[in-house]
Amino acid sequence: MWRRRLLWLGSALIVGGASMFGYYFWMQYSADRAQREARASLDRLIEAQRAGQRRSQPAARPGPRTGDVIGELTVPRLHLSVMVFEGATAGILKIGAGHIPATALPGGGGNVAIAAHRDTFFRPLRLVREHDTIVLKTSDGTLRYAVTSTQIVAPSDVDVLAKAPGRDLTLVTCYPFYYVGSAPKRFIVHARKLS
Image (cartoon, rainbow, N blue to C red):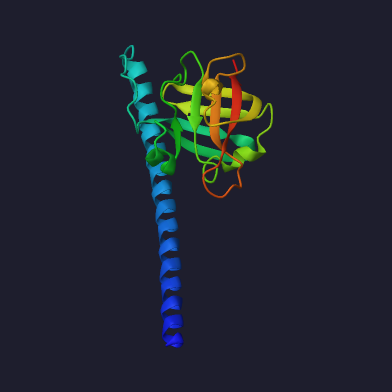
């Protein structure tokens, strides 16, 4: 009787472990594929933008819709590179970084806010330092920023998204970085646009 139960328990643990590994690899594959497709999409947008500028004055474009590719964010010193999509839904944050709606768009006036998970794309931010360069490549051009400060805040502290001196770009992720489960705080990186 005990032997049968132990055999059943062992089998259940093996199947459960294999399922968890399978789920993890499927999620990783999906995110990698989405990043590749978004990078190719951005390259096509950049080429179309260049072709449009050569022909005539570009036509006004509508604002981005949830899921549209916004650009590619890189922090060279940290070897961080992630595609940025419009919106910060759970689905978007599984495949990349998300532009937080109601904040400025890259190239516009205001504070551009971008969020990503601490345990995937924004994991390297734990090593960010003042004056680090952040590059945001969009179809309209490449913008460069310098980190001005970092802070840890409560999730309800949305004032960090407001426009203020030294805040042309704000990166948001959960904190602490090594917390298991839903983290109680937010790690904020502020950066100013370089001319």
